[in-house]
Length: 459
Image (cartoon, rainbow, N blue to C red; front, side):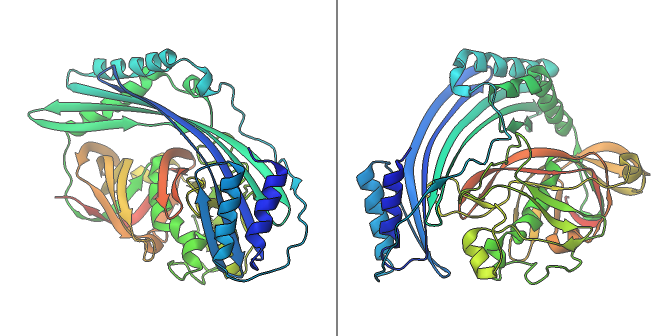
């Protein structure tokens, strides 16, 4: 992508005014998508971005800049502009860049760009047709295939030269059910750090049927009554609550600035002893997995909470300087246009010892949140509000009628104290996480859990 000599010269220029660390991040990314509406192709998109981001540190001061070109003149001009912000001068020693290859535990069998659009369209059309055939109340189907081929190169004044290629594919199937002038939507959206072999993991007709069944179920559901009650949250995307309400507060970008509910609590009991939470960017072919982070540090498995004890934060280089901590391979960015910072990869609550049937039977009256939706959170306080996409009442230890309009309201630091039952079957769900360094792919996950008491919003 960039020659070794060009990288060395860019680093020398970036260091010329007294910085003690410099970094060049080059990127070439191609993203494509195909959208179907009611089984017909509605849009096909193809986008390429290419550019460089250059960043320098002096102590805990950071200056960064970017250029939307990989031409040598643009790269060097960007390095000089960044250096000018320090308005000083320094003697720069000769730099030696040693390439490091950290390996790839995310093999891709079929590069998406090598597969004809017609094959992808046929797959999504089959899913959408199955959704429509599921019920006469399905009035619209939507399908989308999204693929990204993300190539990065990183060089630093510490002598590191490394690169990575990240290919990801994701499928979306959405079904809209309608009756008496009212609509409800069901959706399923699996993804992985894989190529088109992702299609082999999922029967398209099964995807369509699941989306349709959710839409029809919620169409005929009554409304839940508001109140404080125990809630069982299903595995997979149910982990979004931990991700949002607690995960962001464990990122060094929040901790270093004192904007986290968990500042100064390393080694302390912050959750129920049944809770162990992990962020692991090394899961083979995981949607949020990376071989290296966007500073060139190898990804790793970070145990954040172990048996309720806060063990670690997710740390990037800059905030590691502020905290006096080493990087945990957690620095990520959407593209060269953003400064990297500490972010999650695949974050989940680890398996426990409780049986799913015991969790449900332990609840006399409460809510079973089978599928979570979107929501909002204040990362400083951990206060959150999340919609339940598909929910059911629990009566006398049995899952009963479906209900809609439910939301879960609480505070992260309090809720993790109230997770008092943790199941054995961990599953993960895929999403895109937005923060200061842009939108990045992340997995959330957990087994079935019980929250002993939480405010359920409703009617």
